[in-house]
Image (tube, rainbow, N blue to C red):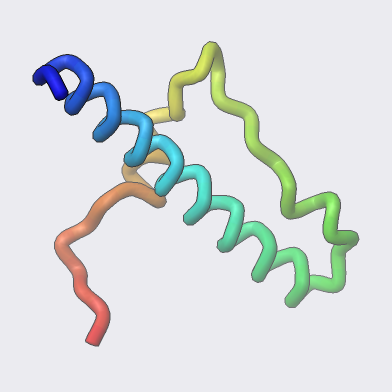
Length: 66
């Protein structure tokens, strides 16, 4: 793999991880509030880019699970 292919793969993986984290949180909140399941399927990136606020909330952190 070239450096460009590796960097693209990393970016795609991070994008998917952020999307999955947000979807999981929305699904849990929808279940707790008794909302229909469709409410948890929200995902609205603009031109394929993740909002910086969303990335900060659902992106990588230095916290670890024990």
